[in-house]
Length: 234
Image: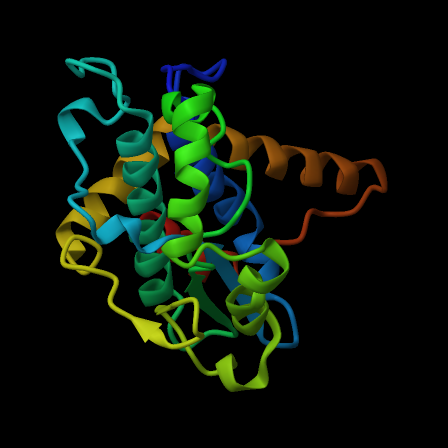
């Protein structure tokens, strides 16, 4: 979370870039490799139930350039909503494969995530927020990580896909916006363009083909790449 608007070198607002666009790009670039694994694969997204609290995406100003006032907390919520929409759509697209997708919510946690927000930089409000956080059930990171570990490694979660795990390790609603497939597909298409996905994917393939050519071998078509391509670009 940040109280001031900042952008990456590619011009994307940093919270959106960190919580969604970068996640989208990374998962897309490694997905074909994950399909080839001879064991089940779990992709776990660390998210928050704040996505269901007066939160929606403004596709006309997704990069938060034209807001009357930049609200770091709202922009953070929207970036996590985008991540949840991507995770849900990905879970639908990988059904029937060796990959499952989960979201995990650690709940209110005592970390320095919000230390850049105005409420945290003013000593008086910071002093007031501490007891409020305690009363609202704020937990230490070593306890808050339990639902994340459950999603990552617990055998009981092995068959779950597209499920949002709450702090007590129970399923919770993803919300109306996340369940809207048309909005998810619109975000997916936007993310393909904003992350320059084709450019990165082609660059990696050229590196692979080049390394094969040095050994005078004919580059082999990656197993599963056809399915991956249809999944990512449909």
